[in-house]
Image (cartoon, rainbow, N blue to C red; front, side, top):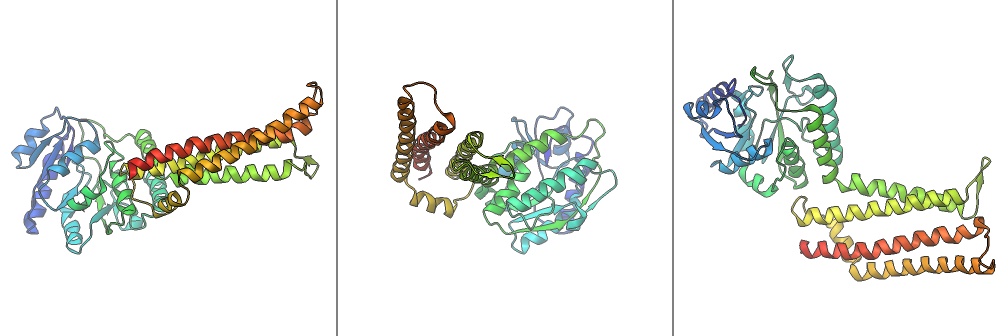
Length: 378
């Protein structure tokens, strides 16, 4: 149980846990990971027979990680100490452990069989935040077994916890666990639970709706280079190529002529999209090397096909092609005795030339950077 000034409810949570362990003959320990309480929560926990682990670094994730690492059992269940989770439901999780599951996620939402007592969950959390973030997680990370990724009551094996190598120190710790468990193909299931109103009266909940919601969304973005960088980058490049196909020959459609302005915008789209694709590769490679994401066979195959030398050659060829187009534009200027130019004609060489030079230069630099990341990864 992570704990920060939970004197109002901590004893109730411990009593429910002790009763569940006793009545169902479950051998276990109760650990209270105290994150710097000033209301006597530590004394309550010790008096009730729980083991107190003092955690100096503030943060929900920090408290949980310290408590989990101190746990002696092979199966661990976590839950907040605000009496919103009913620890008498602990046997449901133990039963799933005995069936061989590595992660047992609680579900408070009716669509997953759970129940929310009136007044237990704020309107925005129940009808917007939680469903939206869960939908994103199910779509981006294939968390099909989970209907309530934000539920703080869950169980997992100590072995799985160590394999996941979790990093988040705040409220997004719970989301990181679900996402990484899915990415690492853990054996996951879900059990319905009842969610009760927060029993504390001395202070408001620690959860902050917009701050913690944004931090979860930010976590989704950095853990999914595909949706953050790859797909947007591909769309931008496609739009840019379509623009070039219309502007270079000066196509007119419905009274609209696509010329120099279209070329400029198209070059912007292509350069931005290419940069986004590079960031997808950089992020994925770094995340794998740091253990944030599991090894991706697709990235490994790509890096095997497109090594440093090939990327350098492609970048230099692109750079030289751009320089050649720029030289053509300079000769056009020379033919005009370095005077005024027909920009409608000259820009057809100058804009693509500049774009190709930039793409080539980016490719050369990017290939060196991926090579450095690859050294760390190997």
